[in-house]
Image (tube, rainbow, N blue to C red; front, side, top):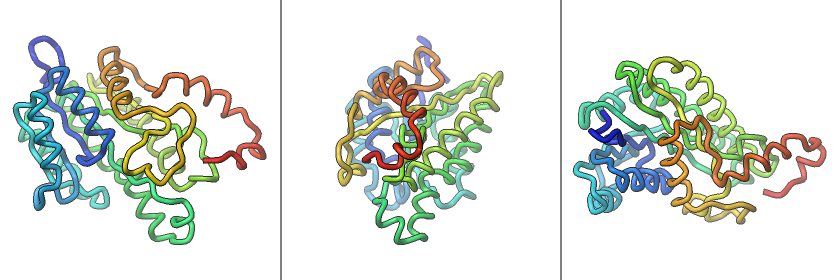
Length: 256
């Protein structure tokens, strides 16, 4: 439950090693969150998210817990969400930040790897998102923050496996938000542009980049204002309004 002054108290991060996700959680801790659950594959068996947990405690979190979470195991997702609530109580914010970028040429040459990447970046979010929605609906409050991407707004040839997965995620999140309307719970979709992280290190920088800190600040503002969709940076909303209108013959030749 939100604390006495109405700020976020509990946070679950699905994708406990995500640099963007951790930046968002750190910002929420700075703003008053005190109980955090980091869910990631192997988080309980290894040091895993230990360093991140230490940084969050140093930033002011009273509790930081770790849970195992595997995007490729949908049958376990509801259990992870329930376990997180058992640890910290009602979930004020759930940050959905797991996925993989991959290299387009490698994914085109390896259909199995492409399908696994799509599972991590899209289909795993379906079971996880529905499990979170069920929990938030029972609570009667809470926000699911879905880290989408401008790559899913219009899919480009240069990264169409990742872009298609993000397009699916974005559409699913919009529908899930509509399904939660009137329940007291909601979905906020975050559409960053290029963000330099370990995952994107092999990708050339794109126009209008954003740092993880800028994404985190935009998420915090969106939570305060009740935004449904957050673009980072904001100017990308206008840029992509124009990009949607480009003829396909032009679009297919755009660089990454």
